[in-house]
Length: 624
Image (tube, rainbow, N blue to C red; front, top):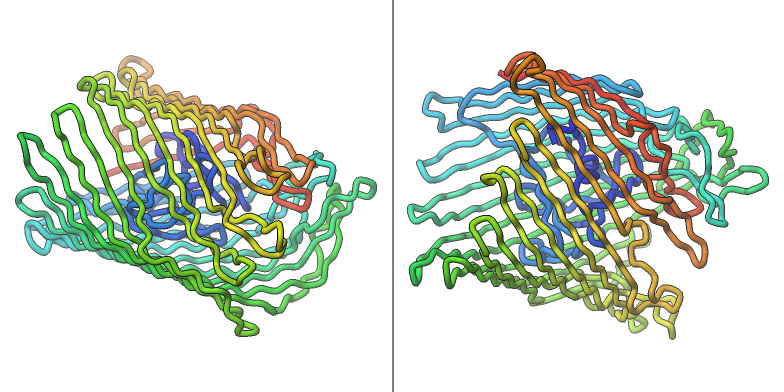
């Protein structure tokens, strides 16, 4: 993340092999992996339950991002089978360290960060860390603005030599001018307008804030066992009012309809997890046993309204439209609760093999209410659902391992059948097999994997009662992923990956059978980044970086009409210089050749979004 000067989770995921980023607007996004939406987002292994109405915290807060591909029902419970993204926050250190950086760039980009950590007591048993960031920029469309402050603080206390308590909070706020993306023609043709085009109003506004409070208590036993209690509560609020395209572009006049939308959203997610893991010795080998329980409570409140429509010409939009207030006339509240118990056993029958088996028992329920009429939706309730995973790892040599795994899928649904009952959960499985290797004295790591995901019980239209659903849908995704990352020579770092993804509806409505489940996921995607730093000679301190992303075509479909973005390639470059061990600067240019392309295609009404134009950023960093 630091090498490429990435500052958002969205940007980091774009550089991750096999991840597809769908930008809802410049501040909000959806992630897809292996053809499925990623809805399992964690912070320090604890569910954060994000959705695209809210903004994730700044990367300044996190030490690293971990991505586990495939379903993670063992620890996450319910969820789509694409992937789990875990954000590992920065921890307080027992030595004083001060870091800071400032950056300027294209489109009035300005950003500053500070990071201070150290012990608060001579014994070093009390430690603290404070991180702050502020970003201010214009977006690719005009008019626009984007402002994002972030503040993070954490305190760690060693209650005993073996027990540590960690407390903290993260606050993030974003204020920006939203735009849901360009409309298109009804025949599948995308607009060819300047990337700076805004179809909307200059008074469009989206304000959102997040307060994330957490606590963690860990005890380490003499035999290597650990017990950990984690609790997290996340409160998010968003308030938005905007004009958004709501029709296809008239091919004769260039006119499009726009609707006035107002949203008022509140979200609270509370998660508690208690687990215990211990090594044990048997038959001359070391094994591991894990057991845990967790609970998650989630409340989501939406109040919304819409106003009279207007029109705009997409080729010469007048953004200075009069502001007309929109009343909140609708509203709903959803409450979701999940409780679970999980266990996992890792056994080494011989030194070169590891067997893994895990199981989870889940209770899940949800209920909804219309805040205007008081009407309640059908209650979905799942009791005692068991999900399992199995795996085996063979250490062929000290540096090469082969593995195979199986994992269950569990995703409750809220669609209603003709008899008024809620459909049973989606279920299914993932099978994966691969190889992992470590080269050059563990400096370079590589892996390759084949996967197959079968997703059944999917809600589909009831052919006998078209206003209701049946749990008869079935879909499959399969593919191949490979990645290499690390240092291939002194001063030379490289990351490169390739993903092949193929998805298909196996059972759906007649028009969808055989069609892709996720046609917006490119079948082929390549990414690479390499950086070389001169460590000796007259060029000592200089660094050069080069990166790229190449994807095949992708599209969205409505009936027989497709909106398609052909395959494209974009490249980035970086020039850096280290003035001293503590001060360095980098100039990073993305989309080096200023390629014009659609990063996401959606429908004729909106959601078609250009990729970022050529962008330059100069960043100066210091560390003491």
